Amino acid sequence: MARKKIALIGAGNIGGTLAHLCALKGLGDVVLYDVVDGLPQGKALDLLEAGPIEGYDVNLVGTTSYTEIQEADVCIVTAGLARKPGMSRDDLLGINCKIMREVSENIAKYAPNSFLIVITNPLDAMVTLAKRVTGFPKNRVVGQAGVLDSSRYRTFIAQELNVSVQNVTAMVLGGHGDDMVPVRSYCQVAGISIERLISAERLEEIENRVRQAGGEIVALLKTGSAFYSPASAAIQMTEAYLYDKKHILPCAAYLEGEYGIEGVYFGVPVSIGAGGVERVVDIALSDKEKQEMQGSVSHVQELIAAMDNVLAQSA
Ligand code: TXD
Figure 1 (cartoon, rainbow, N blue to C red):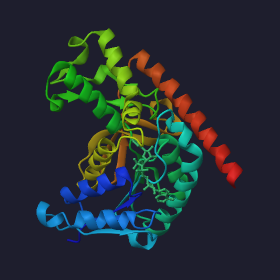
Figure 2: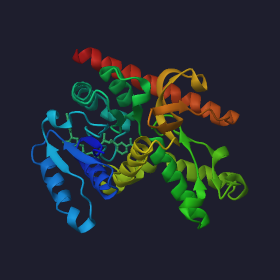
Figure 3: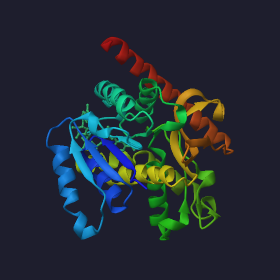
Figure 4: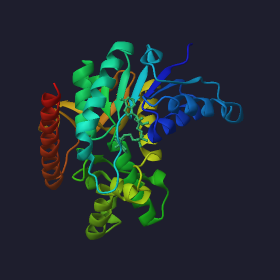
């Protein structure tokens, strides 16, 4: 059977880490694309030369030409600017809109049957634009944010209780902004409700740290944003698709009435398998969580309106 082909659009910090993980896990042949000549070629060659040591046989190609992504099975987009200290994700809207439009046109042209995962910020707007421009059905366009935000929640809970991260299940839903929704009622440690283990006040502090966790890393790095963990998150989604896992993961999915939300991309639990986003999983939320979801949807809708303005001005 031929190896799968994974196209990584953007060969920066996340793109390079994605390529490394794809190779280490043997997910398929990798094409790294970027507009900066030399960057994708250099990273691909470097990774290829690690192959004999790590024992992977996958091929890695770096390119500035979209023809190389021809017939890719999966496209993961990280092309665009990343945050610097003092910037919100929404500040990236203007510049990343233009980049996402160009990237999406080329994906539609060269990899029309691919499963498309968007990572570029502001995530909820960028994934919306990718769906519009590619014209792909909603099951083949998904945004990565919730897997990462949930992993941050799980990390902090595991640290707090000094237990294995593998014992902690948690979900963060909603938009990928500071008003994201850590769903406390579904957070468990070895099946035990988190509310039995940590006080409400302390949980509030931990959840606030989750909401600010992206900014915490930006403030430390000073020149960019998190990249190891966002890459791991997108790879988990890629594996769910390639191995038809039906893995339930929190992702930005296009909603048509689910959770009472119509016509926007929003972070909800979905099942990912060979059909892409195969279904949205409906979970009962507390009144407080429902209210927080509403607040977060309003923010996403404002972001989309701002994006439409930017697009109208540049048309
Ligand atoms: O969970 C999440 N969704 C995120 C998203 C978590 C962390 C960071 N997130 C966002 O991902 C971040 O705000 C950025 O918008 C993207 C990519 O982050 P990364 O850290 O990889 O940024 P880099 O290192 O700056 O890499 C971006 C690359 C860089 O090499 C540029 O040359 C390239 O994008 N770029 C392009 N590639 C292709 N096509 C075009 N037009 C283009 N323009 C820039």
